Amino acid sequence: MKRWIQQRLGGGPPSKIEIGRYGEDLAAKELHRRGYRIRERNFRCSVGEIDIVAEDGDEIVIVEIKTRSAGAHADPQDSLTPAKARRLIQLGRAYLAHRCRRRPHRPVR
Image (tube, rainbow, N blue to C red; front, side):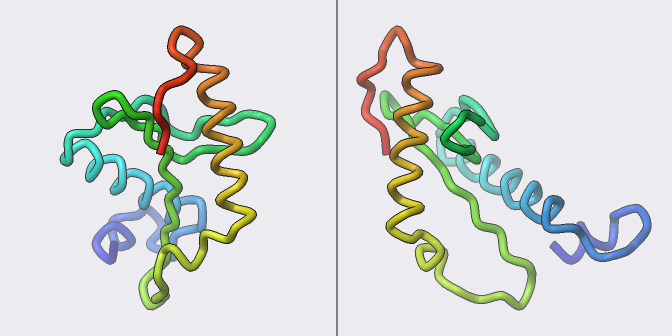
């Protein structure tokens, strides 16, 4: 990330939005490298937003990205509260309803 920051125009520190976008780009590249097909990024609906929707075989994979700046150390699962998990389930259902009408009962993880 340090090189990316140095390459920015203006040379100042990146905004939270830029850091988040950078993390989503890295995650999408890694998912693709592992054989996932990226269906959509930043899916928005009345429930909220899904960072990345991918396919792994026949399964739809809902991906929540949490990018931390350098020096911030914590386990990613620590940011997934029960409320956030419930919201991701609702978002997965909303995605299926909006985008998978021909196959609305696909496995989701």
